[in-house]
Amino acid sequence: MGRNIVKAKLDIIFKRIFAVKENEDLLHDFLASLLEIPYDSIKEIVVQNSEVLPETLSGKFSRLDLKMQVDDKLVNVEMQIKDEPDFRDRVLFYWSKLYSGDLKSGEEYGSLKQSISINIINFNLFDCPEYHSVFKVMEANRHELLSDKCAIHFFELKKINKTVNKDNRMELWLQLVNAESEEELNMLNQTKIPEISKAVMIIHEMSEDEKVQEIARIREKALHDEATALGHARREGRAEGRAEGRAEGRAEGRAEGEQIGMRKGEQIGIKKAKAEMIEAMRRSGMSEEQIQAVLKS
Image: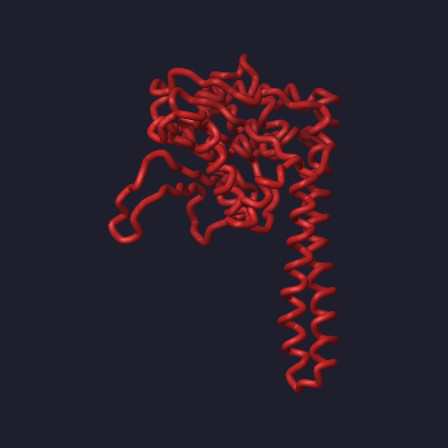
């Protein structure tokens, strides 16, 4: 039986692999591969939030992402383990903050940088066989690009196959992020690609570190608790709402009261679940302005 390995798709482990200065070669190759641009076209990478504060590890509803400036571009990478309501809207909101947040008072709009959102997700979001989807702003009929300053990428890990192809650098990196066993890491290591082998070695070293293992365990539990809490709130809210709606429908004496009540109950349930989501966003540290922007999107 192979040893237990820490999983790179866990955001805290992903950030420990790619955000440290001595692993900039890995981040360089990772970004070039996922964005499908030449390695040599990237001249400089400045990670803007490399630190991970201890108190964020066990806190529920906290998110760990990787923000950086890549030459003249802004890039944000986020791992998302569990599906959640309004995920697409949240991605769009965070992209908009990335794009607009760099504009200083008095600067012209033309100085806004190309902003790229990379979302690596551990669930299927789109009804297609491709694991890579990229969205841009373009005219619906002519497909004319409005601006090249918006790019939102999704990489769906559930659609990644297990066959290792050393000529497909994008897939190799995603397979490494998705690896859950010693066997998978060994297959990747056999490609003899220096950056991939170095990443495998780092995962092996972290897997032997009891402190890192404990951090990973705590973080995984926090993410699980988050998904469980939000799911419970939605189910409880809908069930309570349906019951209230049925009672109100019967009280009105209508023959169709049950059906009316069910529909109204669903609305009440959604309203309660929305209130729970707002509270979760507050616990995550989002400001009231940010929360309102999400609700309006």
